Length: 250
View 1: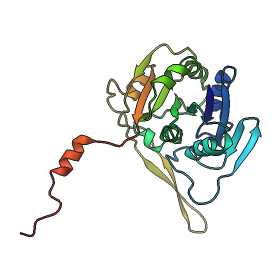
View 2 (view 1 turned 60 degrees about the horizontal axis):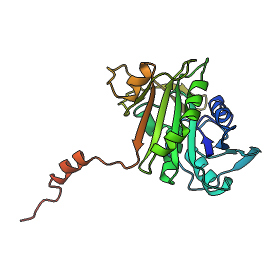
View 3 (view 1 turned 180 degrees about the horizontal axis):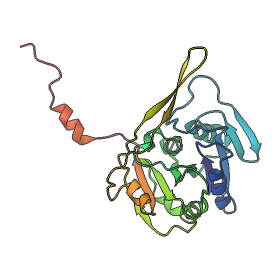
View 4 (view 1 turned 120 degrees about the vertical axis):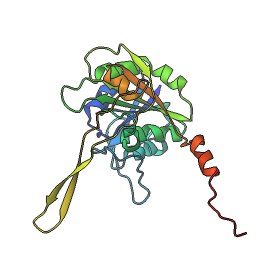
């Protein structure tokens, strides 16, 4: 299978390398990934100005753009043929629930699906060492055919795994939770008068709902969530249809 790897942690990320090592012996693996960290860029794409691409080694490229840019550049220029799958990750840190809105990791998988290619986002539930990427990379390698065959053009796949040394024992098919953060800003006043703000904050502790991605990962299971591309909500549509926005003059 011809596979494109990308991420939002950068082309030298150990998570990406663990995934490449798990796949390269049996598949035609290409890497087009950002030249530095691009976390929380969401689905930003470069529409003004150029995107710089540099070949670091055979079939491995760095890109000055976003994760979504990497997929576009790879499919339309860097790769000689369209990939069969795009795998984004393995991300350092989970992408659970509403994190998907902000995630550059998820955006790369979404961009693949928008271009008619199976897209899978992969994240590990840990931010610091020790980081155990190998069980998730091995799971992907073992289940690659199923992941591609189950995919259709209406969704991408978001996978989160616990940070464990053990092979994946339990898998749950989930939906995204509502993840709320206790956001705050750290302020820094510079000598010349500028004020700088740095984002901080942690997820708010809530009662986890069975069936959600966060619930699954908190129990040590691997979470697989198909994420729809079409932002459709028929229930809310009906409420708006019943509203009389234009008042009659009669």
